[in-house]
Length: 128
Ligand SMILES: [Zn+2]
Image (tube, rainbow, N blue to C red):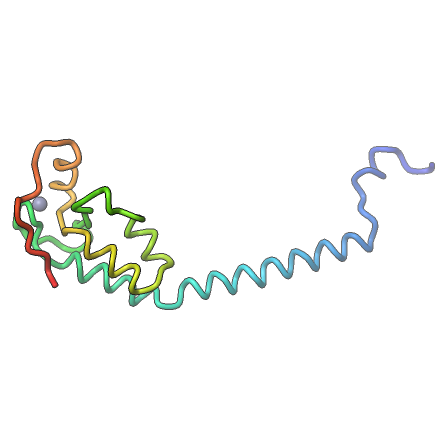
């Protein structure tokens, strides 16, 4: 009983500390692998999204840089996930499916639409 109770409580036995470190190393290794796996095809997915955005806004018909364009789910009921989520990790087919449900709208119209100031045009000819 040489050491104080407090110190004894926080000092882990050497063996456990090694096991803990090993566990942390494993965890880091596994997670960096998962991260890499998710990044495979990210550029392709990003290009798919960028292509879908590189059309004039379906509401105001103006062309904007893709950074200003957003993809709006025409039928919110059919929305299974956000495009940005799928862009991070999803199969190309899954992302393609979701993009097909969307219309390109500029950020301004998207906001107006969201708050009910404008409507989507009756007939949307989706870019193919
Ligand atoms: Zn617009």
